[in-house]
Length: 302
Image: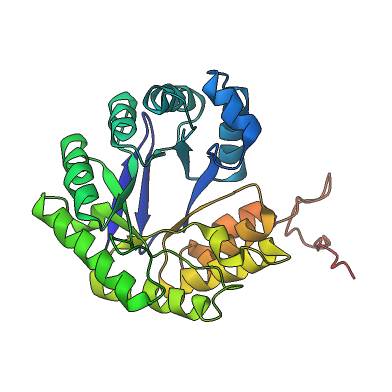
Protein backbone atom coordinates (compact mmCIF):
# COMPACT_ATOMS: atom_id res chain seq x y z
CA UNK A 1 0.00 0.00 0.00
CA UNK A 2 1.51 3.30 -1.13
CA UNK A 3 2.28 5.69 1.71
CA UNK A 4 4.24 8.95 1.64
CA UNK A 5 5.49 9.87 5.11
CA UNK A 6 5.94 13.58 5.94
CA UNK A 7 7.08 15.01 9.27
CA UNK A 8 7.11 18.30 11.14
CA UNK A 9 9.21 18.78 14.27
CA UNK A 10 6.64 16.88 16.33
CA UNK A 11 4.04 15.30 14.05
CA UNK A 12 3.98 12.65 11.32
CA UNK A 13 1.45 12.77 8.50
CA UNK A 14 0.92 10.05 5.88
CA UNK A 15 -0.47 10.54 2.38
CA UNK A 16 -1.73 7.14 1.31
CA UNK A 17 -4.18 5.01 -0.63
CA UNK A 18 -5.76 3.78 2.60
CA UNK A 19 -5.71 7.11 4.42
CA UNK A 20 -8.09 10.09 4.61
CA UNK A 21 -7.58 12.67 1.88
CA UNK A 22 -4.73 15.09 2.60
CA UNK A 23 -5.53 18.81 2.46
CA UNK A 24 -2.46 20.96 1.74
CA UNK A 25 -3.27 24.59 2.54
CA UNK A 26 -2.41 26.91 -0.35
CA UNK A 27 -2.66 30.40 1.12
CA UNK A 28 0.97 31.14 2.01
CA UNK A 29 1.72 32.06 -1.57
CA UNK A 30 2.13 35.68 -2.75
CA UNK A 31 1.20 34.90 -6.35
CA UNK A 32 -1.77 37.12 -7.18
CA UNK A 33 -1.85 38.55 -3.62
CA UNK A 34 -0.31 42.03 -3.79
CA UNK A 35 -0.64 42.76 -0.07
CA UNK A 36 1.01 39.48 0.95
CA UNK A 37 3.79 39.92 -1.61
CA UNK A 38 4.54 43.45 -0.38
CA UNK A 39 4.60 42.29 3.23
CA UNK A 40 6.85 39.30 2.62
CA UNK A 41 9.26 41.36 0.53
CA UNK A 42 9.74 43.60 3.60
CA UNK A 43 9.99 40.58 5.95
CA UNK A 44 6.63 41.45 7.44
CA UNK A 45 4.96 38.12 8.25
CA UNK A 46 1.70 39.35 9.77
CA UNK A 47 -0.50 37.85 7.04
CA UNK A 48 1.63 34.71 6.84
CA UNK A 49 1.06 34.19 10.56
CA UNK A 50 -2.69 34.67 10.25
CA UNK A 51 -2.91 32.37 7.21
CA UNK A 52 -0.87 29.62 8.85
CA UNK A 53 -2.98 29.58 12.00
CA UNK A 54 -6.30 29.85 10.16
CA UNK A 55 -5.54 27.03 7.73
CA UNK A 56 -4.37 24.68 10.47
CA UNK A 57 -7.50 25.47 12.50
CA UNK A 58 -9.69 24.80 9.45
CA UNK A 59 -8.37 21.27 9.09
CA UNK A 60 -5.36 21.46 6.76
CA UNK A 61 -3.01 18.49 7.25
CA UNK A 62 -0.07 20.31 5.64
CA UNK A 63 0.75 23.83 4.47
CA UNK A 64 2.33 24.84 1.19
CA UNK A 65 4.87 27.67 1.64
CA UNK A 66 5.86 29.78 -1.36
CA UNK A 67 7.84 33.04 -1.46
CA UNK A 68 7.90 33.74 -5.19
CA UNK A 69 8.18 37.54 -5.20
CA UNK A 70 9.72 39.46 -8.13
CA UNK A 71 12.89 41.41 -7.33
CA UNK A 72 13.17 39.92 -3.85
CA UNK A 73 15.59 37.54 -2.16
CA UNK A 74 13.33 34.53 -2.53
CA UNK A 75 15.71 31.94 -1.01
CA UNK A 76 16.19 33.95 2.18
CA UNK A 77 12.52 34.92 2.49
CA UNK A 78 11.43 31.32 1.95
CA UNK A 79 13.83 29.99 4.60
CA UNK A 80 12.69 32.57 7.14
CA UNK A 81 9.02 31.94 6.33
CA UNK A 82 9.49 28.21 6.85
CA UNK A 83 11.12 28.75 10.23
CA UNK A 84 8.32 31.08 11.28
CA UNK A 85 5.51 28.77 10.14
CA UNK A 86 7.12 25.82 11.88
CA UNK A 87 7.13 27.85 15.09
CA UNK A 88 3.38 28.48 14.72
CA UNK A 89 1.92 25.12 13.65
CA UNK A 90 2.95 21.52 14.15
CA UNK A 91 1.85 20.11 10.77
CA UNK A 92 4.32 19.25 7.97
CA UNK A 93 5.09 21.73 5.19
CA UNK A 94 5.33 21.63 1.42
CA UNK A 95 8.31 23.74 0.28
CA UNK A 96 7.29 25.43 -2.96
CA UNK A 97 9.57 27.23 -5.42
CA UNK A 98 10.67 27.20 -9.04
CA UNK A 99 14.14 28.37 -7.97
CA UNK A 100 16.53 25.59 -7.01
CA UNK A 101 18.54 27.76 -4.60
CA UNK A 102 15.32 28.61 -2.75
CA UNK A 103 14.38 24.95 -2.54
CA UNK A 104 17.75 24.09 -1.04
CA UNK A 105 17.67 26.92 1.50
CA UNK A 106 14.14 25.92 2.43
CA UNK A 107 15.21 22.30 2.91
CA UNK A 108 18.18 23.36 5.03
CA UNK A 109 15.91 25.48 7.25
CA UNK A 110 13.22 22.84 7.67
CA UNK A 111 12.99 20.61 10.73
CA UNK A 112 11.49 17.26 9.81
CA UNK A 113 10.66 15.60 6.48
CA UNK A 114 8.90 17.96 4.06
CA UNK A 115 7.30 17.60 0.65
CA UNK A 116 9.28 19.45 -2.02
CA UNK A 117 7.27 21.26 -4.68
CA UNK A 118 8.41 20.48 -7.32
CA UNK A 119 10.18 18.65 -10.13
CA UNK A 120 8.94 18.42 -13.72
CA UNK A 121 9.76 16.00 -16.53
CA UNK A 122 12.29 18.44 -17.99
CA UNK A 123 15.72 16.81 -18.07
CA UNK A 124 17.48 19.88 -16.67
CA UNK A 125 15.01 20.12 -13.78
CA UNK A 126 15.26 16.40 -13.00
CA UNK A 127 19.05 16.63 -12.85
CA UNK A 128 19.08 19.45 -10.28
CA UNK A 129 16.03 18.74 -8.11
CA UNK A 130 16.23 14.97 -7.66
CA UNK A 131 19.73 15.15 -6.11
CA UNK A 132 18.29 17.58 -3.52
CA UNK A 133 15.47 15.15 -2.76
CA UNK A 134 18.01 12.38 -2.23
CA UNK A 135 20.38 14.56 -0.20
CA UNK A 136 17.71 15.75 2.25
CA UNK A 137 15.65 12.55 2.28
CA UNK A 138 12.36 14.32 1.54
CA UNK A 139 9.43 13.50 -0.74
CA UNK A 140 8.75 15.41 -3.95
CA UNK A 141 5.85 16.57 -6.11
CA UNK A 142 6.31 15.55 -9.74
CA UNK A 143 4.46 17.78 -12.21
CA UNK A 144 3.42 16.16 -15.50
CA UNK A 145 4.92 18.60 -17.98
CA UNK A 146 8.26 18.57 -19.78
CA UNK A 147 10.24 20.53 -22.36
CA UNK A 148 7.26 20.44 -24.74
CA UNK A 149 5.01 22.18 -22.22
CA UNK A 150 1.70 20.96 -20.81
CA UNK A 151 -0.07 18.50 -23.07
CA UNK A 152 -3.86 18.45 -23.25
CA UNK A 153 -3.59 14.68 -23.85
CA UNK A 154 -3.82 12.75 -20.54
CA UNK A 155 -1.85 9.87 -22.08
CA UNK A 156 1.09 12.19 -22.71
CA UNK A 157 0.91 13.51 -19.15
CA UNK A 158 0.91 9.91 -17.88
CA UNK A 159 4.10 9.20 -19.80
CA UNK A 160 5.75 12.30 -18.32
CA UNK A 161 4.73 11.16 -14.83
CA UNK A 162 6.18 7.72 -15.54
CA UNK A 163 9.42 9.33 -16.67
CA UNK A 164 9.65 11.30 -13.41
CA UNK A 165 9.08 8.16 -11.31
CA UNK A 166 11.69 6.23 -13.30
CA UNK A 167 14.28 9.00 -13.02
CA UNK A 168 13.62 9.25 -9.30
CA UNK A 169 14.32 5.53 -8.99
CA UNK A 170 17.69 6.09 -10.69
CA UNK A 171 18.58 8.33 -7.74
CA UNK A 172 17.35 5.78 -5.20
CA UNK A 173 14.09 7.64 -4.55
CA UNK A 174 11.19 5.17 -4.24
CA UNK A 175 7.89 5.70 -6.04
CA UNK A 176 6.07 6.19 -2.73
CA UNK A 177 8.11 9.37 -2.21
CA UNK A 178 6.97 10.85 -5.54
CA UNK A 179 3.56 12.56 -5.43
CA UNK A 180 2.38 13.18 -8.98
CA UNK A 181 0.44 16.28 -10.03
CA UNK A 182 -1.41 15.25 -13.22
CA UNK A 183 -2.13 18.91 -14.04
CA UNK A 184 -5.88 19.39 -13.88
CA UNK A 185 -7.16 21.55 -16.74
CA UNK A 186 -9.98 24.15 -16.54
CA UNK A 187 -13.19 22.49 -17.68
CA UNK A 188 -14.60 25.83 -18.82
CA UNK A 189 -11.95 25.91 -21.55
CA UNK A 190 -11.58 22.17 -22.20
CA UNK A 191 -14.85 20.27 -22.04
CA UNK A 192 -13.31 16.83 -21.47
CA UNK A 193 -10.93 18.04 -18.76
CA UNK A 194 -12.92 16.39 -15.98
CA UNK A 195 -13.17 12.95 -17.54
CA UNK A 196 -9.56 13.15 -18.68
CA UNK A 197 -8.32 14.08 -15.21
CA UNK A 198 -10.28 11.30 -13.50
CA UNK A 199 -9.05 8.68 -15.97
CA UNK A 200 -5.48 9.88 -15.52
CA UNK A 201 -5.77 9.78 -11.72
CA UNK A 202 -6.99 6.17 -11.95
CA UNK A 203 -4.02 5.21 -14.13
CA UNK A 204 -1.54 6.86 -11.79
CA UNK A 205 -3.12 5.01 -8.87
CA UNK A 206 -3.45 1.61 -10.54
CA UNK A 207 -0.43 1.48 -12.87
CA UNK A 208 2.26 3.66 -11.30
CA UNK A 209 0.89 3.17 -7.76
CA UNK A 210 1.83 6.71 -6.74
CA UNK A 211 0.10 9.26 -4.57
CA UNK A 212 -1.36 12.23 -6.40
CA UNK A 213 -2.09 15.90 -5.80
CA UNK A 214 -3.35 18.88 -7.78
CA UNK A 215 -4.26 22.53 -7.63
CA UNK A 216 -7.91 21.85 -6.80
CA UNK A 217 -9.27 25.18 -8.04
CA UNK A 218 -7.87 24.76 -11.57
CA UNK A 219 -10.90 22.73 -12.64
CA UNK A 220 -13.35 25.59 -12.01
CA UNK A 221 -11.21 28.46 -13.34
CA UNK A 222 -13.32 31.11 -15.07
CA UNK A 223 -16.68 29.65 -14.00
CA UNK A 224 -19.27 30.89 -11.50
CA UNK A 225 -20.00 29.12 -8.19
CA UNK A 226 -16.48 27.74 -8.16
CA UNK A 227 -16.54 26.26 -4.66
CA UNK A 228 -19.45 23.92 -5.44
CA UNK A 229 -17.79 22.80 -8.66
CA UNK A 230 -14.46 22.27 -6.90
CA UNK A 231 -16.24 20.17 -4.28
CA UNK A 232 -17.89 18.01 -6.93
CA UNK A 233 -14.55 17.45 -8.64
CA UNK A 234 -12.74 16.64 -5.40
CA UNK A 235 -15.37 14.08 -4.39
CA UNK A 236 -15.03 12.33 -7.74
CA UNK A 237 -11.23 12.60 -7.65
CA UNK A 238 -11.16 10.83 -4.27
CA UNK A 239 -13.24 8.05 -5.84
CA UNK A 240 -10.74 7.82 -8.70
CA UNK A 241 -7.82 7.48 -6.28
CA UNK A 242 -6.50 11.00 -5.73
CA UNK A 243 -4.92 11.27 -2.28
CA UNK A 244 -4.22 14.99 -1.75
CA UNK A 245 -4.77 18.48 -3.11
CA UNK A 246 -3.27 21.92 -2.70
CA UNK A 247 -6.32 24.00 -1.87
CA UNK A 248 -7.90 26.58 0.40
CA UNK A 249 -9.16 24.83 3.56
CA UNK A 250 -11.15 27.92 4.56
CA UNK A 251 -13.77 27.13 1.88
CA UNK A 252 -16.38 24.92 3.52
CA UNK A 253 -17.99 23.43 0.36
CA UNK A 254 -14.70 21.85 -0.68
CA UNK A 255 -13.86 20.64 2.83
CA UNK A 256 -17.32 19.14 3.34
CA UNK A 257 -17.05 17.38 -0.02
CA UNK A 258 -13.70 15.87 0.95
CA UNK A 259 -14.86 14.75 4.38
CA UNK A 260 -17.94 13.17 2.81
CA UNK A 261 -15.85 11.44 0.16
CA UNK A 262 -13.63 10.01 2.90
CA UNK A 263 -16.71 8.47 4.50
CA UNK A 264 -17.96 6.95 1.23
CA UNK A 265 -14.49 5.68 0.26
CA UNK A 266 -14.10 3.90 3.60
CA UNK A 267 -11.31 6.18 4.80
CA UNK A 268 -13.26 7.42 7.85
CA UNK A 269 -13.73 4.33 10.02
CA UNK A 270 -17.19 4.13 11.58
CA UNK A 271 -17.78 7.66 10.23
CA UNK A 272 -16.02 8.81 13.40
CA UNK A 273 -14.49 12.01 12.02
CA UNK A 274 -17.73 12.97 10.25
CA UNK A 275 -19.79 12.44 13.38
CA UNK A 276 -17.33 14.36 15.51
CA UNK A 277 -17.49 17.33 13.15
CA UNK A 278 -21.23 17.49 12.56
CA UNK A 279 -23.19 15.82 15.36
CA UNK A 280 -25.06 18.41 17.38
CA UNK A 281 -24.43 18.56 21.10
CA UNK A 282 -27.24 17.36 23.37
CA UNK A 283 -29.26 20.12 25.04
CA UNK A 284 -28.18 21.08 28.55
CA UNK A 285 -29.28 18.49 31.09
CA UNK A 286 -30.19 15.91 28.43
CA UNK A 287 -27.85 13.05 27.68
CA UNK A 288 -27.63 11.93 24.07
CA UNK A 289 -29.25 8.56 23.58
CA UNK A 290 -30.96 8.58 27.00
CA UNK A 291 -34.31 6.78 27.20
CA UNK A 292 -37.12 9.21 26.68
CA UNK A 293 -34.74 11.87 25.42
CA UNK A 294 -35.41 13.61 22.16
CA UNK A 295 -32.71 13.48 19.53
CA UNK A 296 -31.86 16.78 17.94
CA UNK A 297 -31.73 17.11 14.19
CA UNK A 298 -30.39 19.89 12.04
CA UNK A 299 -33.37 21.48 10.30
CA UNK A 300 -32.93 21.54 6.56
CA UNK A 301 -33.23 25.03 5.19
CA UNK A 302 -35.64 25.63 2.35
